[in-house]
Image (cartoon, rainbow, N blue to C red; front, side, top):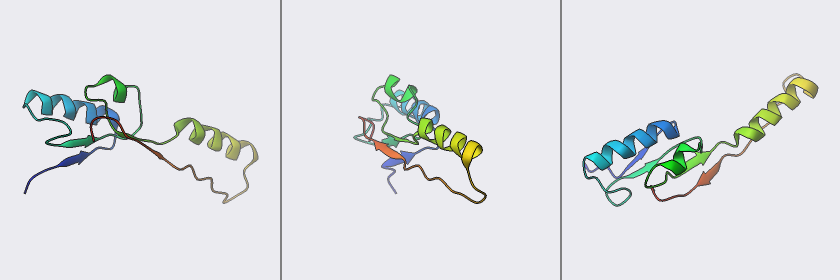
Length: 89
């Protein structure tokens, strides 16, 4: 079985994987695609830049504060994540 992609739960993990794969002469994304999650600044600092999922943290914080200030019991707010395609996938 050939591994062709890695998806992580955090951009920091994906950045470490990218660096480790490069040390092993693995070409990203040609040999293995790497995907992060968070869209933190580290995603733009590694080479190749990480593709990632932006969880819209600023919108999540605003929604949480709104719920604390004005929310009704059982009220739910949903924030759609956003796919950010860069060079790693």
